[in-house]
Length: 316
Image 1: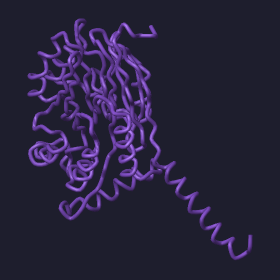
Image 2 (image 1 turned 180 degrees about the vertical axis):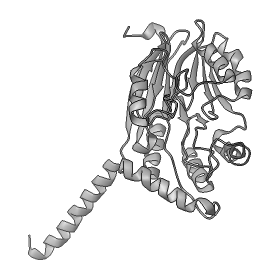
Image 3 (image 1 turned 180 degrees about the horizontal axis):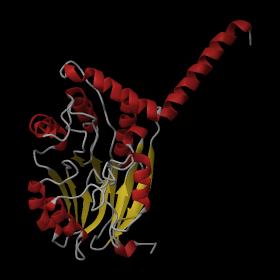
């Protein structure tokens, strides 16, 4: 090889290395899990994605341009990845896997900005499988409006094209399984949703419950709670800041009524799906109730849950 060809070869090699580095940066890690459920007669595949925190803004939301750019940069700096490219990859992987349902469990967008909504809407258009979209604590925030009445009145409606409903919950019903997603409101469940959903939690059809904020395990000093406290710290009152429960984000009367039905001995709820804490966890929140929490989507993390009839169970 002549000396004249060496620079071209080096340039080509560097280009390939750069492409490989970009591909690695945008890789996703999908945790494969299995759950056997009594009363289910055939298998289902569910994808769980949360906390992608898409933070795109344009001149339709001029007051948020600076904040959105700062937030986007912080997520990309933490993960070392392009947030939008990772989201695109998660959608591509989901489309390839063809699950029976994809649950987007909150904080998919970082704020209710038109550019973020449009981007996610465009990616959802690529999906040819059913999905549920649950609002987390960030999806409908706007500037200083965080968990406020104004946020719900003026900015939550922007999510309608993503959620497909103006209700505070969404449902996907299969022949022998219900998947119910409920929006959070200041770490509480909306009264209208609880009133509508309680009859389903007193029925016999198996239920998968999807929330944004995970439930606090009923056992004291659970691994989930200890890890959450280590990462997120305690509130000013010494409570866990990122779980819903008696010594965490304490449920109000409406939320407690809902949780009582979830934890009841004859409850049809077989599992809880959640996000919010930005790390993966699979653990029992009661003697009989499993909770699957996905890691942060902006890091490329997701969970694929294989649901099987109890008769197909291979592990105790």
